[in-house]
Image 1: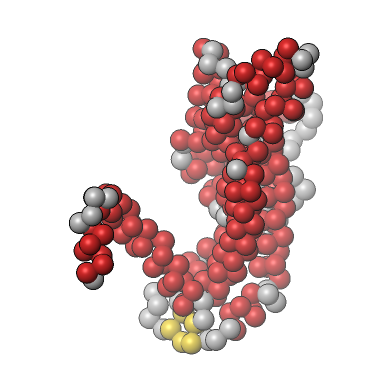
Image 2 (image 1 turned 45 degrees about the horizontal axis):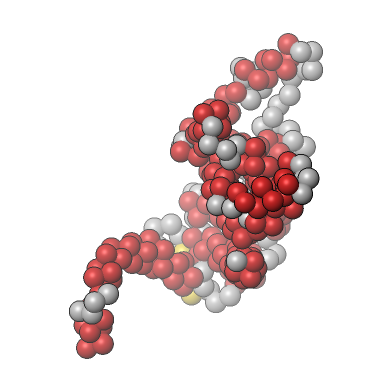
Length: 294
């Protein structure tokens, strides 16, 4: 206790007073729920927690024999494979095209970033209306072009790709803006030297821009991969996991088991912890790689 008081009354002690509210919020909304969820994963419990029984590791063994949970992991992994490369590499290319501070580029930055600040609920409803098989504007235009009616949210072959497109459209702007900031921090003298040596724009991008922003690339890769493995809102608002669970992500399935009529909060917590461990391992590996690049 004396050591804590000494720190708080030191010259840098005021900094701790400023971060104290953030620490409280972190504990209340992150650390405590995480610990509670971990404890609950070893129990059989319903949504109201009025009947809680210790179950040992049975929830974890059940998860790895649950075909629907394994399918949700497969769907989540496939979603990440579709989304992450486009987010990391596509955003880098777009950022290189709009990094100059011209009026046109500033306009395009705003356009790309606009979906980021919109509600996922609103975006899901909007795209569901646009791509609706009967009244959707885009569907109507496709029909007018003589390509027939396409049911974007009920065709198992394309629905996951449609959901991935909506998710990319929504979050693409944040990746592009982060890349723009990184590119603008690259010294202009390097580009001038490359231009004097005869390098064209493409060669400058490959040999100057890409190597200079590698730490940012790993940061985007790490955050977008972690985000794609937790996809929920777009799936829930557009398909609800259908058709036939072909778009049911792990978080969507966890939500269904936790808050359905036959609530299994303990089992849902166990599945959540399995996903948490997977994401943590991937994040730690990518974080170490990012620090090595930095």
